[in-house]
Image 1 (cartoon, rainbow, N blue to C red):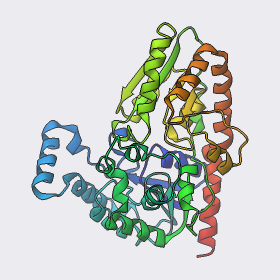
Image 2 (cartoon, rainbow, N blue to C red):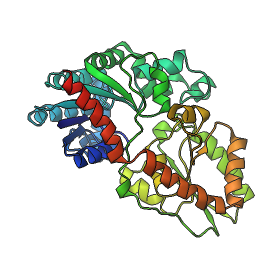
Image 3 (cartoon, rainbow, N blue to C red):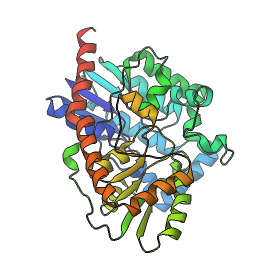
Length: 384
């Protein structure tokens, strides 16, 4: 099959592409590389020109203030149109999101409409914020979520524009437009499956694919100083609950000044990010989730002990008895207790790290996950 993957977040579509190509399919990714993260894509419509230089960035901001139009979006659309000859004759077109190109809703709709003209079967992955997920969090969900700081009054709704924009009519319409065209919607983890229990086109969870060959076991066997890594994407600071980690680390530094070394990085490109936690024993991923995201899974594959989603909801959603992840909860005292235990019992770091790698190899390997996607694609094309 010829497969077009639309958009890229966190390396998801690159890992899926790897697996699908091993199965013999022809796969192309079109996207913007997810901004500063710079994920590889085959057809690049990014607008780095306006971010690369101080002058062009200021020009973009000034033009937006004067006209209300985003020059980045215009450049993306121009580059998309220039690439249209490369996005014809596909059997499968899969969107990673209803806002896969990170443009305003009007510009995004133009590109969506042109993609939906391809004579193909369409699929939508649920692996990030979208209309149904945001509506679920604001209307139905019980317990903590990425909107915890809004609920607690620490932040305003306006500070979460990236999430709440999906409730705006034009973004909702774009989502529903793709859903109407899609054969199925595929949740990648428990967080997104929760929002789709009433969605008739939703499939069972297909876990996020990981290209396991890229990540060898990389456990730091020197436990004389416990290395703790925290990577911060400032735009997602409150959504991921990084404030809980920072408060916990303040106490950890006070308790164990000679036993720990804490590394904190902010807003670094993906390629640099994965190199920076090379020596880490513990990686603090995110708090306000029920499943693991890409950073967590890739670190687990390398044998790091990861704090991320590992709740009862996760275990039930996947049918697991346990998971080698430290379930990160929005409770500073709890986080301090869990980190302290690992510092005082470094033998557990080795045991959990090896189990974490085996877990990813067993449940997320890209070829295995690609086979599950292939089955969906085949069934859809067979019955068209």
